[in-house]
Figure: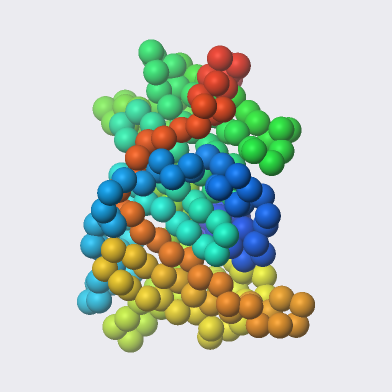
Length: 234
């Protein structure tokens, strides 16, 4: 429960755009995604009936990436041995390792004050991430990916042999969440989480869809790559 609760703020960041339809999310055709984050095919077929929530969660954590979509929002997560990229609610975060330097770059298309660029030595990155030296940067990237992937650990649980939305945690994560309205739909290559919230006294349906498992390209924006030249040692 502690791990799941620790990620509630992350959930709010990921789904805020889906829940309240922030206009910044779809200005310029989803700036930062540009249609280049996916490639042909629908992704791996891991969302099938008969699987437990933990089996699906583990498969997602072991993947190279996936995409979350919700109403007018897109959240893209991707990882390889030297990179971890996250794009959600107009904010792009890139962890990357190049020429012995580990970078953490954050580019916010909506807020220039939220643009950051930091860099560390290989040794600092390993020490600060508490991974064993044997796992190297690949281990650090995997930890970054797992942290940003905690949405899937928070919301789903098993009940009476089926996967359901965790009503208690959904109530904490989604303002105005209507108890009992949550549903989980498994469709092979996609997983849909639906629920209703009270917005200004009216029931408002919202859906999040997770798809493109193991089918996301590494496509950082030119803006975030340019931050490497500005990165400061920390």
